[in-house]
Image 1 (tube, rainbow, N blue to C red):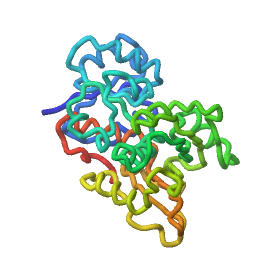
Image 2 (cartoon, rainbow, N blue to C red; image 1 turned 180 degrees about the vertical axis):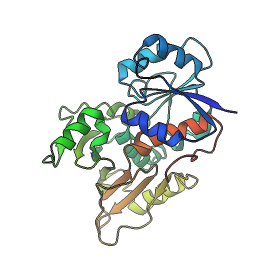
Image 3 (cartoon, rainbow, N blue to C red; image 1 turned 90 degrees about the vertical axis):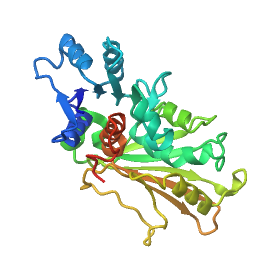
Length: 309
């Protein structure tokens, strides 16, 4: 059975990459609007209601308005914006964490944020299993390729080759924090310090953990084994078993599109400190790849079909 899909916001970075992953797939029939009609609300509403699944690649307010256009009880939604990530009635679209069947059966799915994907993948299995405390002031340091900032940021970085690092959200109110806190059941919002680097794609998300002073003083090996067990059945999320031999990790500006996610648990020689690190493609598992994975599940297909793993 063919599933009809309308990508609302198909000309943006996320929408284009979703379309690339769906190209040539007979399981889906894409509904498209030409340039003259894609900003016509009547045309969009018609396409949204004709689709089995609509994927929203829009700013938050526009995504909310698009959902309000649905006039039937059939059309299902995957929203790539921040608008519904902690909203009642929406399923958080991280199947490895919330359950594949939960996503498969959902009518309203909110795609996780890119940074949030790394943070939640590392921390949620550990807090939910009481290996790390929920009442702790976690910090999260992260860098991302500039493509995650949309067309304006892409143009800015590609026009000004002198930019080496762009720190932002200096007011400590980044829009990903609510979902990071909610999905890990944290009683204290994490201190999040994101930055953008001169690479088109790619992302590293890190949570430093002072093991020795945590309740129960868990070991890095215990945390690593717990993550390995949690993701043992996942074809997308992998947990590295060893520390890189040279003691370094690279994020290359030439990174190819990738829909996987690799987690690392690195410990100090004394075992008193650890670094939990997630490596992913901000446009892959951090955005478009995750949307396609969710679409596959919602369509009764193997979750990895069409992914770049």
